[in-house]
Image (cartoon, rainbow, N blue to C red; front, side, top):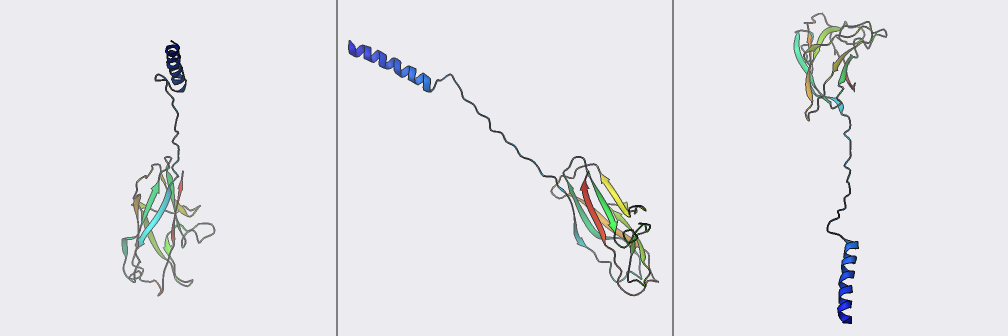
Length: 175
C-alpha cells in the first residue's frame, strides 16, 4: 500500500505543480504600441523653363508658358506661395515699382510684362513688392499640384539691343 499512497501523492503533486506553472483558464496579454509621425511637406519646385527667345523686342509674347511649378503640401491648415520679381518691386527700396519688368543694362528702358501663376494674374503689392497666393487646402498627392507660370509682353520695338532678364522667386510656407 505504500506504493499506492506514493502514487496518489505523486499524481496530486503533478497537478499542483502544473497549476502553478500554467493553467488552462488563465491568459497573459501585453500591448505593442505602434507610434510614428509624418513630417510636414511644403515644397515648390520648378520643372523645365522656356527661354523668351530672340523675338522679345520684335513680337509680343502672349501667355507664353515660361515654367511649371509643382506645389506639394500636407499641412492641413494650408500654405501660401509668395511671388517676387528681382527686376521689379524688389529693386526699389520702397517697393514702389509694382509693374513687372524685364531689365537690361543700366542704359536700357525696361520691358514691362504681365504674369499669371496658375491662371491668376500676379499683381505686386506696392508695400512689399510681392504677390501672395494663399491656399487653404492640402495638396497631398505624389505629383503635387502643377501651376503654370506664363508671361505676356507687347512688341517692345523701341527696346535697345542686348539681353533682358528678370528673376522670379517662388517661396512656399505652411500656414
